[in-house]
Every structure is written in C-alpha cells, then in structure tokens.
Image (cartoon, rainbow, N blue to C red; front, side, top):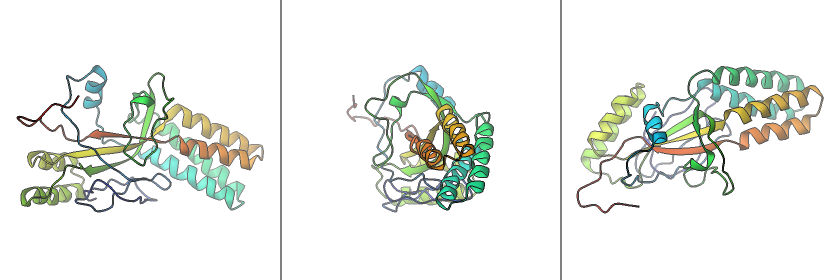
Length: 250
C-alpha cells in the first residue's frame, strides 16, 4: 500500500480490495477488476458550518470498505466472462456467488445513505448524470483509494511525512498514517467506488432469472447494467484548516 499522486491510470486486484497511496505525479490506481479510472483529487476549500448529513459522514468511517461487496463485483464480472466463453454452468455458479456476497454485504455495516446528485466524482470517473435527482439511497463502498491533493508541493518535511505515512499504510495503520500527514499539513483525499445496493441486488436477481431461462444475451446485458451503475465519491481524508489571510471560497 503506497500513497499516490493526484492523477494516473487504472489498475486492478483479483484477490483483495486495493488501497494504494503514492506521491508526486505517479499513476493512481483505483478498482477491482472492471472498476477503474483516473483520480484527479481537488483541494478542499474552507467550508461553512457542517450540515446534518456532513456530520453523519464525519462520524462514519469513510475508509471502511465492503470486502463482500468487492467479492460480489469480481464474481459478477467473471460471470460475464463465462457467458462470453460459452460456459453457462460457470456463469450461473458465479451469479449465485454474487448474490450470496451481496446478501452478506447488505448487513456488514458499510453501506451509507446519500443522494446520487450529491456524489462528488473526480474527473474521468462515472458521475451522476445531470438528470440524477431524488432521495438518498444506500451505497455500498466496494473499493477506495487515498491520493495526495493537487496542491501538494514536495518539501523535505512533506516528503518525509509521506514516506512515514506509507510505512504505516503498509502495516495497515491508517489512522497513524493520516495523523502523520495531518501534522505535516499534507492534503489527502479519499475516493470510493460505490454500488447502489438495492438496484444492484435487483439487477443480479434478474440476471439469475434470465440465466435460468437460457437468455444469456439478456443476462449479460443486465449484469453490465449493474457494473455501469457504479459511481464514485471523493471526500477529504484530512480536514485542512483555513490559513490566515486566505480568501474564503464560496
């Protein structure tokens, strides 16, 4: 696990949720199998008093991801590959695995409520459409990535802090890493890949039904719909204080 810079290309992991961090202009990785995109983290301006929803988000462990959710999406993608390879038996088994993993993910306490229109996707990632509106829905965080803010300027002190943070991250010590970066005044963002829980479960159930009826093309299209439904949200991993004399951004 290493701290990554603000932009780059996609990578993947078939065995575990990837949380990688790096510095400078090194490529940023985000994704499990088909979930990928370039991260362009933005500097967080000084904000007004937090809303009720913002307070709820602050209380939530925003870096807690759903391992079962990640397993579900890997199995779902492999099911699509099985259809392409004319192996309906394997496809049915993988869709069954997807349904089981999603059922576990639904109760693993990682899902959170948020309106799609309020998701803040970095450039190059699936964002809510301009027509997206409506009430808050449950989102399942299936992958995530820490990145340095675009305002990062390497200094000996900050470079040392990033190096120390990487050591903590390699040991799974996220809180210690964040604290080290905070003390060095290093802006860090956290970007999550989110699946709409109820919609995804409905799509997977429909795919299972279509597979059972031998409608493989339709089943694949439904699974693709579930994959395409993934959205991204970026939040500040460290609340940076407003510097004295700095103009406030509206």
